[in-house]
Length: 264
Image 1 (cartoon, rainbow, N blue to C red):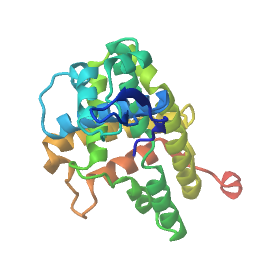
Image 2 (tube, one colour):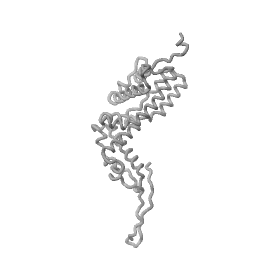
Image 3 (spheres, rainbow, N blue to C red):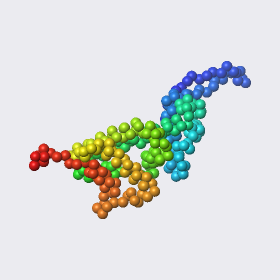
Image 4 (cartoon, rainbow, N blue to C red):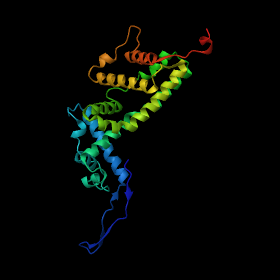
């Protein structure tokens, strides 16, 4: 819902054909912050819509103009809302490039940790049930369907990193990366404690986080074109994603020796 600020109606001094004073309809103006959020949200929706429809735009971000977004917003406005103008947009962003950077940063922040609550909930259930570590790690092997809006958003973010310059990507991802590492790192540390394991000497939790992220991105992209490859299981029915996650977790860590074991 768009939050708008009401202004008092303007009364015209002109008389109608019947000599009566007419009142012009009131228009409601949006605060600048609401205008910015509205435009960025609509831009993101348009990009996801193009992606979901199978658009072959080489670079969807570069092909999206401010005027495209404003036209889409204006088509949905109510009668008492002022139409969006390019002037209003350029009061916020001084160029098409700065507008694209704002969209890029928004998308990266949107995909950073929307999964946190669900993943933490599943982890708590697994730990409370005192499941074996391999079964605890299965909480990571649950991704949204490929036609899910979250999946399209993730695909969009991944795709944009291939077309936008590394410097712009680094700027756009700065806050999102910090948040991603903090949240996923804490979850992994909790699992390490539960498993009585620790990271190998010379490695940090960041290393495990980025290894998992790298594999997850690759699996996500492969699932778009060849889902049958990603959905494969071994002879015992263990999903490929679980096998990979276990390999990373145990490959990056070692058991914590207890005092009695050290004295043997």
